[in-house]
View 1: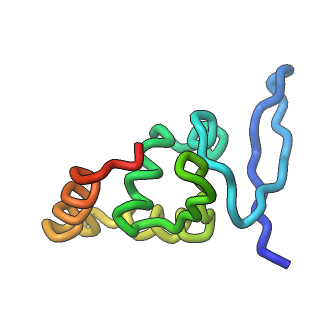
View 2: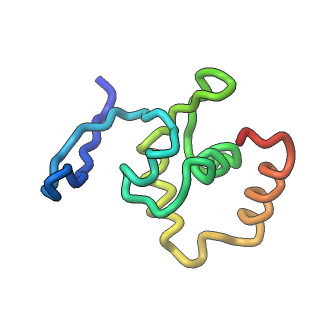
Length: 101
């Protein structure tokens, strides 16, 4: 079976509750907040388009984000030296033409 991930969120009472994520999760406006990320889902799609995280494009407007690759990216990007000039250029160039978002 594919790997599973657990996340924690606050319920209406302010208590923490755990829930499972599968290996792939559907991208959407609420996904970054549910993962505890301070970004928007369009940034995740831009990272995917540039090859920094894995994605499955199910339909022209439906994307599944690979959580394992997202985790690996976040670990790598926590290093201040990660965003080299070459990586910055790749991110900018790939996303300047034919944007997915």
